[in-house]
Amino acid sequence: MDCGIRLGGLRSCLISHWLCSIFVFLALSTVCYAEDSRIGVIYPLLQKPYHSVFERIIDGISEASDTEVAKYTIKNTTEENEMPVISEWMLRQQLDVVIALGRRGVERIVGIDTAPSVFGGVLYVTDTILDQSPGISLTPDPKHLFEMLRRLSPATKRVFVVYNPARYQWLVDVAQPAAMKLGLKLSVFAVDGVRDSARIHRRILNNANRGDAIWLLQDLNIVGEKAVLPMILKKSWDKQIVVFSSNPGHVPRGVLFSLYPDNRALGISLARLAMERLKHPKKKPNVITPLFNTLSAVNMRTANHIGLHLSNDVQKTINLVFPRK
Image (tube, rainbow, N blue to C red; front, side, top):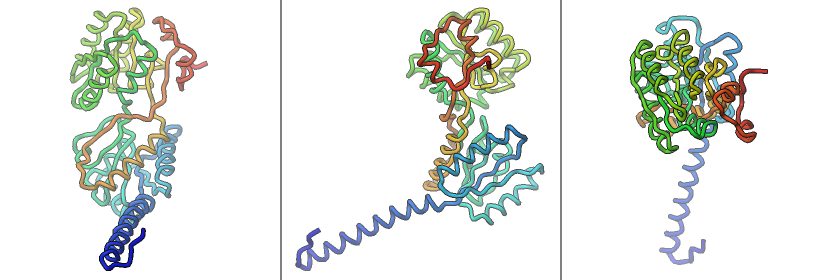
C-alpha cells in the first residue's frame, strides 16, 4: 500500500495496518483455539466386539480434532458415586469440551457443568439431556432411508410408520418434509405400546398394496421382536410389501434394507459438533440430529422375492448383503 508522505495519509495507513493486524490475530487465535482445545470422551467399557464400536468412533474424533483425546471408561458403579469422580477427572485433564458416548456415558454427564458437552451413540435422549447437550442419534437420517428406498424400489409411493411420540416425535418431524421432497407420502400413526402397534400394523398390512412400504423404527416397545416383527415379516412376505427398518438387526431376519453407522465418520461428526459447541457456548443446545454417516445393508433374498431387480450400479453401493455367503 502506498501511504504517501502527508500526515493524514500516514495516520490512515497506520490505522489500516493496525486493523489488518487485529484481523490476522483474531483469525489465528480462532484456529489455534480449535487446534489446542482439549477434548475428552466418556464411554462405557463393553465386551468385544461391541467395544470396538466406541474405539472406531474415538478414532474418528481423534482424526478430526488433530490432538490427543482424553478417555474415561465408565466403571460398574452407581451414577451418583461416579459423577464426582468424572467431574474431578475433567478438571484434572483441563478439558474444554466432553463427548459422551452410549446410554451410560450420557447419563453420567447430566448435571456436570465442568465443561460443555455433546453426545452420541444413543437412539434418543430425555429433555433433561437436551437442555444441557446437543448430540447425534444412532437413528438413521430419514432422508437417507427414503433415498435408499427410492433406489431399491422406485415404484413405492407411500410409506407407513408407527411410532411412540415420546421417543420419536423429533424424528417424525424431520421425516415428513424429507418424504415430501422425494415424492413420498408419509402416513404416521402415534401409539404408546406394543398392543396398539400390533393392531395398527395388522390393519396397515391388510390394506397395503404394491407401491406401499412400511418403515420400522428401533423401538422394542413398538416393534416387539417376538410377536410384532414376525407378524409384519410374514404378512409383508405373503403380500410382497416392502418393509425397511432403522434397525440393521432386522435385515438378516427379512426386511429389505436398513442403514447402520459408519463409526469412524460418526466420530468425525461428533468432533465437529464439539468444536461448534465451543465456538457458541451460549447457544441453546437442545438439538438432536439423526445419523448422517451411514452404510447400507440389504437382504437380496427379500429383494428377489418381492420382484425388485437391482442394477449392478445399485448393488455396488450396498455395503453389506444378506443372506451371508
